[in-house]
Length: 324
Ligand SMILES: Cc1cc2nc3c(=O)[nH]c(=O)nc-3n(C[C@H](O)[C@H](O)[C@H](O)COP(=O)(O)O)c2cc1C
Image (cartoon, rainbow, N blue to C red):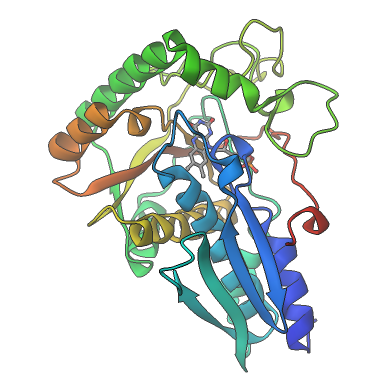
């Protein structure tokens, strides 16, 4: 059933936006609705001051929310009209979005919209079921349609990125400021908070893939995390890097929109993603990755794509908490 009024489309869009992925589930966004126009704002109180001082990951997260706004408005039967970074004097105002002319949603929009609430981040190995090459190629084109690049890494590059991830994870766990920031966003079991990474969203034991990809240490010294999956999934999946040609705030928003479009499309084919962005939070390692493996393009996300039958837990704040 399609939604008929622009104001219904706005409500559906706000509901969809909150399901975007965000670094440590910080949900660093807020919304101001004026008539039928949604202002998407960066909630800089939720920025990772140590891990993300420039707000790059914050803007990628908000870019993913922007893609959900666009998709939900189109799904509701309106062409989304978007102005990105509309006012240089208000840098926290990331986009103005409103329903424009009426349009019949196409099949792709319906499919992507249907995945918004279903998609989950995976934090372990994948089954050995292959991700079809044709899907990988389609995901590369999907990222390009949003103005970003997506590289599928060859085996030697996968080994190199796994080693860089390990090095970054060790360095971060030994850095008190960085480490405490991750702990701050770990959500304890039974907590009533509606943000942070829940204990049911990662395995209790460090997953063993070959090569091994270090996970963030959300549990720290606690016995948190779900039991190992019975299938003993050990495949790393297809390792991919999302890139942009430049590294401005606009590029970060672009990367976020491309990311979410790729994730929703993959999810529609039963393919999930795991992320390992520790390397990208350390400028020297990020520069190395850029020069050695990305042909000079700026790496924005590192992810593994594969097939899993696990259900990860996640939480979100209600729309009423997001309105300003
Ligand atoms: C910019 C960005 C960086 C992320 N980095 C990581 C990461 O390094 N490790 C990880 O396990 N998840 C990472 N994530 C995934 C988030 O933790 C996840 O989206 C959030 O906890 C919400 O969970 P959900 O995606 O299952 O809804 C990242 C997400 C974004 C948008």
